[in-house]
Length: 409
Image 1 (cartoon, helix red, strand yellow):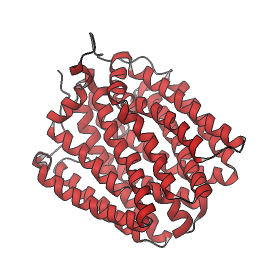
Image 2 (cartoon, helix red, strand yellow):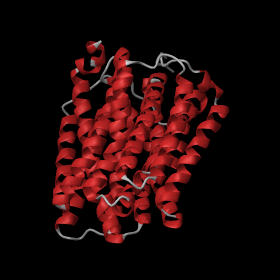
Image 3 (tube, one colour):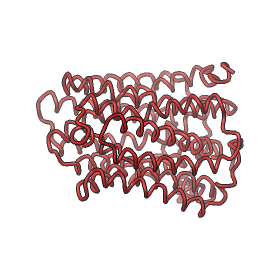
């Protein structure tokens, strides 16, 4: 049992990939919590928190036909390394603004836009590369550990970010910069993996191949669009600075705890998933967990105490983890290797819309109706999405297990 639980780590390339991905996510969390707190502290306007999410999403949307194709044609490891380097330079730029006391919304948004470009190219390359650094039989295990890596970083990163920001903004941004530089260097130590690349001249069919594949595979379309609308409507992460500052009155360290809580819940769920695999009723479990994600969001929205808010956020992370695990396993194993990055580029649009665009939705709603109303309405909307998708995608309801084979063109 123990050997199977750590099967992915028997492969050296995966270990390096895992560490690099963890360091990057860790750095992004430190950067996010620090920038969010500092901008809100300067402006006291939640709409700026929405703009922070929007400028990081738009590059992925506008470049969707380029990001995945570049990784499929030129190599995922190369694109991953270059993208991480761009993110590191952006972190250093924000550090420079802080050191010279030049932090203000507009310059930060410009840098975060470039940061978003780096993330737009990184996302499909990183997701698709996972399949190339572990054997297919160990991939489901790698998906669980990849999610564990991300969730662990979201637990530790915000807490450390809040504590470092409590020392000084420069300290927090320095730490983020160092971690991003280290992850960039580590990526280029990964042995060049085998990858079936797109051959021949680029055509319209090649460019839109990711969209075409997802549209044909209704189970995948339903799974990733379910996640899109659930998190787009129910996401509350962007408003955590408002809750920490004005509602719960916890300060920057408390904001770190709030940001960490979903990751703690998700990490607990990873332990459950890796010990007791989902062997049946996958579709029904997916819909139930999305609905429970919405219900937990409602509880958090109404919370006026950290003793209620933190457990609610933990449940949000736990139920979201199940959706992530099911979606990522299906997406990677059902997609032909030669177009996997293009499919992941499309998937990154769904993820970006659900996260960064969701932050914009939350910020603008909070500006218009208040933070509590924005969160609670989103939670009820998420429950409605789960019910609607159960009717619109019967193929998902009937899906019993994750034992699917990788397809080829």
